[in-house]
Amino acid sequence: MEEFRCERCGAPLEVSPETIVAVCPYCGFPNHISGALKTEDIRIVPTLNKNAIAQAFWERVERDFDLKRMRDRIEIVDIEGHYAPYWAGTVHVEGDVEYTVEEEECHTDSEGNTHCRTVERHYHEHVDRNLRLMGSARRQVQSFGVDDVIRHYSKARPDSKRLLDLDEDGWGRIKLEILNTEMDENQAKLMMREDAVDVIRREFSSKSDRIDYFDVTADEPENVSLLLLPMWTVYYKVENSIFHVVFAGWDGKDVAATEPMPIWRRAQYLTGAVMGTIIGAVGAAYGGAAGASLVALFATLFGAGLSGYFGAKVLEGQRIEHGGRFLGARRW
Image 1 (cartoon, rainbow, N blue to C red):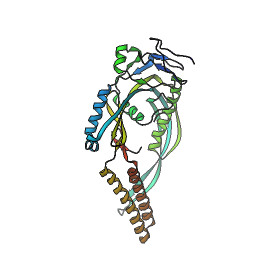
Image 2: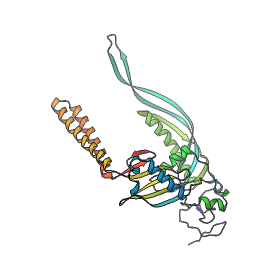
Image 3: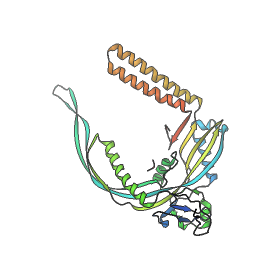
Image 4: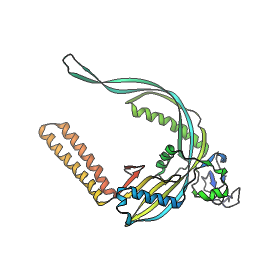
């Protein structure tokens, strides 16, 4: 098997069959292994150190209503950090879209009665936009927290610098493991063009009832660069269970987390599940007795949905938080 060594310092490199660029773990030099990639286009976002991330974790504990009350039982098990590679670029899209929206049209007659009906309205829009897109440069990537890091980066836009501009001292201050890049620039550009068209299609699908005509094309992506984003994960233990929080490395912002579920919150969810069952049963009984089949059907569906949602929360045993929103458990 061919042995790869760093072009700058001669240190051995860990290379897999899919590696596009291997960053030397000793001096930080990006070594081109295969594929279409310009090493001068690799940019890196400097990261906070491990101690700063630990401090950010405890600050998060103090801000969290539930965690603050169990602080004495929380123990940090491990803190892991790495640089994840992402392709970023700008894609110009242009074309025409025709779509239909069903709208309610109302009028009042001479006697003061209001009458409404549903009408279809047809619209035409010309699209001419530049989209800034990002996507993972790895074919297999840990899903939890990755999309949240991308969203936070898109909002925060932290400063980055060319990897080639880092000297050994600079690399030593921000050094972390860099995950292998497995998708080259040509592959990334192809996926960017496809994704740009999909973005426009989703936008019109969300605001219309039907797309009648769609003719939007994407140009060759411009200003394409490989961006290395720092991502830290803090693993912590509460009693006998392990949970984790994902932080953006450049500012210590917590972007995703799993958290223990206190007994009182589990009781809340259990109450919600019981209420859903009661609503479904009472509504179905009332609707049946009154001959209102629609009322019975709605109550049954609503009650079952409510009961199922809160019942699933009870069984989870933990909360999952993304960017400040509690959700149930994107890359290109």
